[in-house]
Image 1 (tube, one colour):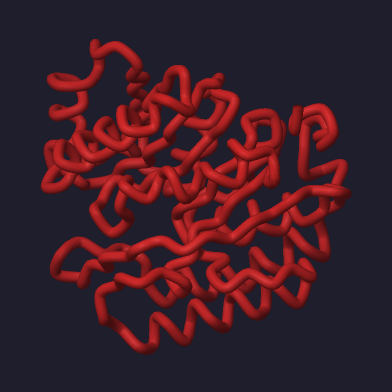
Image 2 (cartoon, one colour; image 1 turned 180 degrees about the vertical axis):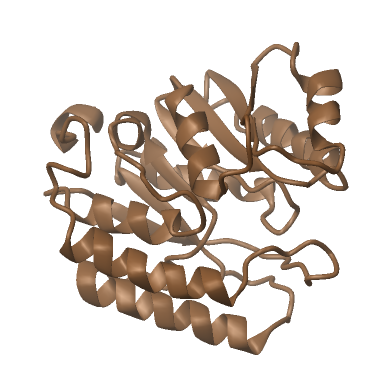
Length: 253
């Protein structure tokens, strides 16, 4: 059993090394359940020193794959590039900041390792620990999650969460076209189209950042997410969502 951890990066030099230490510590702690792991890091043309850190500290380390985008394209494009380089049985998405805690990996991986789930979402609204921040962000998240649920017929509490875990064949066969943060509703819409897919949601902790601390998402991304929900639920077929439509009975073995 191999775990692939995909980390999109844009201007995260302040947290990058600490985040990787936490990811490695978490991977070691679940070694009894995961035979091996890889960390796929994709720099989206950072200009704050992140690229230099990646080249100096991580490019030649075992279990690491480091990719450099030629120009800044957005989180969705970075994820697409990183996922294409994975070969793990399980693929977990991890942001490069410290808002999401890798110590939650055992909870996130549990439903898949126990063969109950094919996809797991980590919900910031079901956990016990979270930083109190922007109320309007909370309302926006709830609105987007509600809108997504209406179209997908899922009952998620946090569609926009970073922590999404997939069985490898499912996410590698997905055709991802969103360049920026629209990738969250896109992934959700496309997995909801798969007949028989088992989606679980688990509680996670969350330590949100302020804009002064480096938070990047804004109101324009919210508007883009609304369009993405419509585009990928209404105007995109299952056949156009995956290069090969996953057979759940095969990937769940």
